[in-house]
Length: 359
Image 1 (cartoon, rainbow, N blue to C red):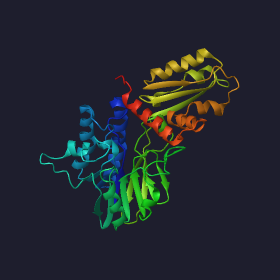
Image 2 (cartoon, rainbow, N blue to C red):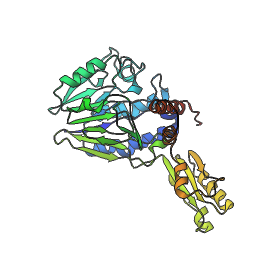
Image 3 (cartoon, helix red, strand yellow):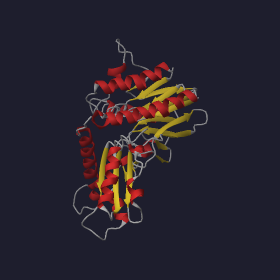
Image 4 (cartoon, helix red, strand yellow):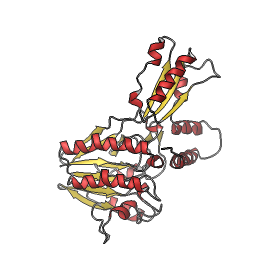
């Protein structure tokens, strides 16, 4: 039996941005559902964070979520299972009030058994899997007991595990020790959007790019074979974030100003200036870039340090989270740098959700 695994879909991300919503829908319409149909996949497990915001959801986003994901799975006859993640819950200390139960339960409250707000053992084709939702103060004791007592060799959940690479070059230092899950042959999880593996722990990664931290980091979903326990990665070929490295030193005007930027339509682009010898050429190139209907453009260049090299300039184009982490690491202060790093990342995440998006 083969099961589609997807996680951290974050419907409503970037303050309900229609640009990002269209990008997400392209993945479902051209990658995810065609694959399920072509390979006759009839079971899907979502490992948490279906929606982006814990407190509310935009009606337009809800309509898209219902029509383009939940209802489509049901109409295809896909046996759907959803594990509750931290973004799906209203409170931080309990999973009791969550978006999936409130949005998709029937009039009599019948949501089980396809939604898991509590640790639950489920059997798929003879293989027992422990479904582990976000571990919070209310369910911590029962979660630890279920992990200790279960005979299941496979765990799927939405977990915060210490020592996991949460984004490229940045590791997580809070949560649950990895040794807690050592009894399982495989512990698969959502929560961190970067796809990574450490021993028996598999962070599956989310299906598409949401912030600059995701740049050049493969995204997609997985197919899990219950018989062989093989985990196959199906890559999403579409990107939202791009970098253009501008260098006109050894190019003709035609090569600079006649570039085709159509692939960047509705995308976020950073123009990294390595060598700019002709301002007019650069302005013409930028004009063509804007005419291609990019969603957002940022130019990275340095006018002050004439000795800057290419590596330094590329580093200037790093994503915000990487810059924040490196800044904290270099501070000469007597504070807990791990806590400070976590605080800054939380503030950055809150800022993304509060940003103004023009549509």
